Image (cartoon, rainbow, N blue to C red; front, top):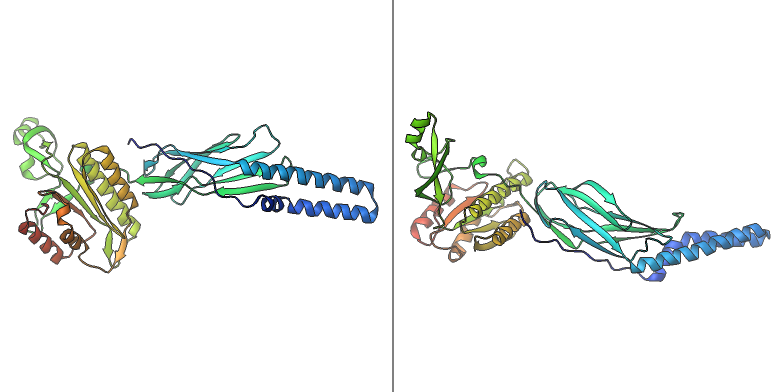
Amino acid sequence: MKVPPAGRSGTAARPNSLHVFFRAAGGGLLASLLMLVLALLLRSPSFLVVGLAALSYTVVLCGLLTAEHEHLSVASVLRHSVATVRQPNMLTSTVTGYRVAGPLLLSIEPLLPPYVVWRHSTQGDNTAAVFFDATRKGQYAVGSARVSLHDPLRIFHIQCTVPPQLTLTVVPRLISLAAMHIALTSPLDGQRVRYALNVDTSQLSGTHPYDGEPINRIHWKMSAHTGTLVVKDFTPSASQTVVLLVNFTVRGDTGFALETLDDTLSIAAASILQYAHDRRLPFGLVAIGPQTHWTGTGHDRTHLLSCLTTIARAQAVQTEHTGIVLDWLNQNTRLIPAQSQLVLLAHEMEEAEVVHLLKQREASTRHPTT
């Protein structure tokens, strides 16, 4: 999948310089002063030399740490700002303002949010690259990093954390519509039919082996010639707009985790959208969840990316409300183009909702066909 370039992240606000200095040098200053007091009490020249040396080292090195800390900034770059689940990705964090030839030592550790799994990393003088992948679809804030400066003896250090300022969008892994084995059952006669988006049945484009399709799709002459059942393939038709309505809400206890339902609906929705895009069919998405999002209709790659991003943001939730799908259709009928084909993905629908939906289809020519 081609994706837009990723953004960059900057730096976090830092505390006052004096506060940073005393926070780093506090222990060293206290130890040095104790040595000097002990040297005066014991009148020991050796303790005096050690105390002065410790005090000088503390002041000079912590001063350098504080000054260097003030000039540091971190830029983070994502290889892919939009990726699929389990797609390898890379986050590179680079520290600017650090003098590699100086006496101070720098370490940088990129931080990853949950469901973003670290695989391995590489370190440079002022850069760190972490290779990762995401285990679930969603939108994640990335680019956070922990930066530490040390003195050569690693006695003193200053550490700061850069907040995330990049967004990683993870969409479900797409699978072919044929591999999903989606089938619809007509509420009128219970006939099992193979799911197929808009096709022109007058334009035969080829054949494929039989895999449970309706009997009227079988190419009998070719089947007799080859000795095996084959099914007709038709040319896609863009005469209708495909409107995909995904209901991420469920009522009561489902008996399984909401994450499972979320993943199942998201994979099916993303795969159907990809199918429509590949066949140059106009399509749109309605995602009903904690918030309802309508993407409008389109057919290009940019619109597909917008729809996939909407799916990535959606979350399955439990609710006590009924008729959510019908309420949205009743209130937003004019948003859906006339003669559109509506594809509904939901965990369940009550019989009354199905009957109401069928009546709406019959009553209004603007209502999408199902």
